[in-house]
Length: 321
Image (tube, rainbow, N blue to C red; front, side, top):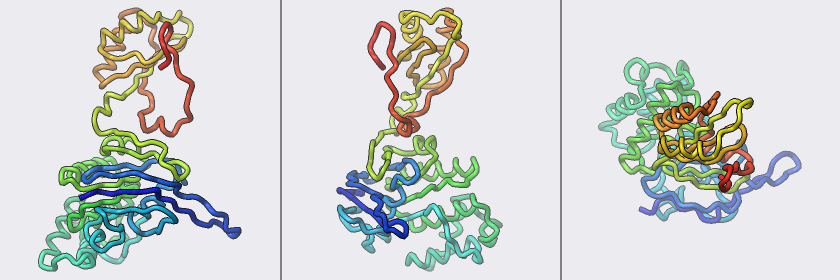
């Protein structure tokens, strides 16, 4: 198994009556390892959906190529082991949820002998067992439709799963369910590609995340291991008071076993591993007489990818952070 390999992928299309050419993807190159949960994030119009379409073989690139385990993405051998949940679901609304899963079980060429059992198990896996499975799809809420779409994507135990905004319109219980199912897929070494605007969820479940902007991959972040250690606590003190000295800030950071990242006349930034570390440094600052008036987490690493670069914050008596 070689996973997913993307080499110099470019795709453009014509827009409007004038036929203006838009470059949706521009020389994208990356590798997604077997069993990896890989996230795709970026602003609207960045090329994320076009990228997914190329990975699935729905769109033909202008240049470059995509291979999945060394084969084209539309190869039937790849199709048999691929599950897909689109962002915009178009379902046969007259069917029941159970009918829908049985129908797609048949379309996938899976054994008829266990069709009903696997369809019922699929519904139970996403919380649509019992009466919900017997209900007509036209009576489903948006969250129930998302759950049904995920159940369909997971039929036949695929080795590659592509999810486009899987938690859209889903309630908190559904989001927890999606996280649990993604953890199960990871445990079975299923390769998952996830496109989502819910950055906190992406950071919780993915191994790596690609930030796409203007059709290019601007950054790839590793987020699976030690992501909590990247939390940043921003502390602000009273403007009317004299700012604490650098030595006092460093002493509080050392006492709390955290890192001072930077400070200015309004406040300071600390790298903290968890809530307990944040509480320790706040206690140390207050004990040292620092007039703290506010403490809040700074944007996570993924949120910061969407922000314009800022000037570095200097540590008085030290270097820039």
